[in-house]
Image 1 (cartoon, rainbow, N blue to C red):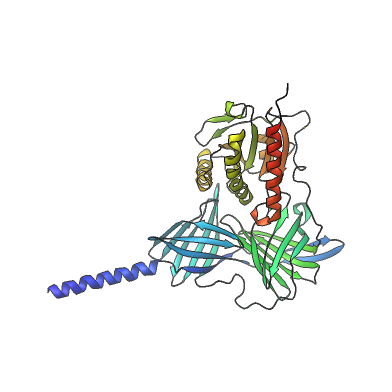
Image 2: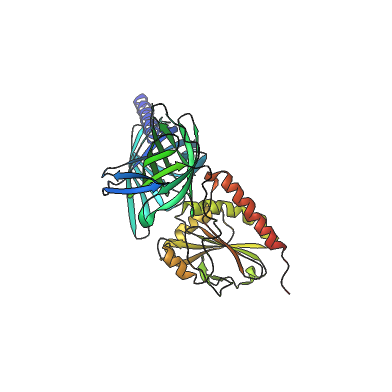
Length: 435
């Protein structure tokens, strides 16, 4: 009888071990795939340098692929999302039986999945203020490729700078594409007047270009035909669950964007910025407060939903450590997807904790609609995009306004911005008070 009991206990322990092993995700590189909504059929004509392209976006579901790595961290597991040189760590991974729940550290989004062997299926869900937007999602373990396991040999090399137009009509956006291709692998981004498309990664297969990115908040897919060494045509751009547009590009090593300091200004008759908004604890904060007196002040217009704002915040945290002792203050004005203070507070606390932000974040109570943003700061002519950074001198006068942010995915543009921005700060700190 005793022997039978011991055997039964061992058997139960073995079953428990097997059950535990099955709930864990296989470590290593996975391939994830988000499915877009079919959307509507759209045909447009776009032109670059006197050449035209007719693009038809059919009613079909595109797949936005990306890679991530699963690692063990003690008795838990973590993910690292891979986009080119970016590594985005996700630590909130919960496994219950065959269910997997993954909460992203930013952007108020999550995965709810079912594990079957070495595959995952379910949904990626973005919480957008008053509604949730789901996307179908699948993932496969031990799959290091992004687009193709065995891709066709590339016919062209897209390395270099391109003048690109994304969209058409009023939504038409002139951008600069910068790519680096090694073999079939391509990395790079599109720079725009309001920021960049962050770390894009993909491949050239035959005469086709494929690029994608997923950062927990945004999912992008670019596809196109490469028509010779100087033309990219028939481009299709998918964003999130429903975003669908067209694009075209021509090689132009001299392509550049307007000066980011020229896009937003003060209205005539204004020299100063004036606002009072509540911080995360509900305390009103104004530029007239003592902490800002006789200081160089950086006002950061941002939103926790905005990837370019996250890049700027990552930089601004280190900038603040360096310059706050020298007489600089930073204050972030948050424009969230909702006017609900409690909901905004929750997402901004995630942001604060993720980056260990020491400067105040204020909940404006206005949404990320640009007209609403401009209404909240009546001294500004307009707000072109997020982030927008306002530089104020020691007397309280607005000296410059910078639209957008070229993040680390833009390479040299990022380092150039830092150099220029910190020189401007040094110059303003060196100014003597007016008599």
